[in-house]
Length: 75
Image 1 (tube, one colour):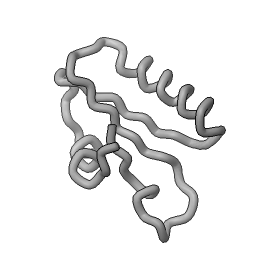
Image 2: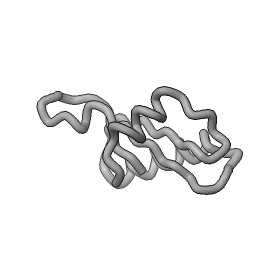
Image 3: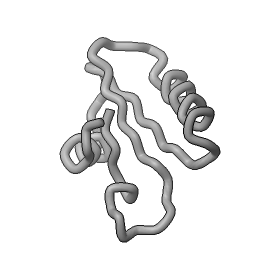
Image 4: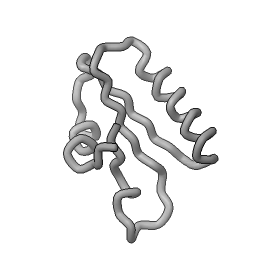
């Protein structure tokens, strides 16, 4: 899991929490998993905005994925 985006900048105010979850094996339900992770995070951390991206080996890597993996912090 990687944290990326505005929450990495201590001088930035507000903003959502951007997370990328990289799975080791393919799954057909990436959108469902992202929604479940989002719900779990809200239950544990409170109602705030989370953007959860889920990728696996079959995911075509897009610019946002590259940015998260290269600039983000692995948790």
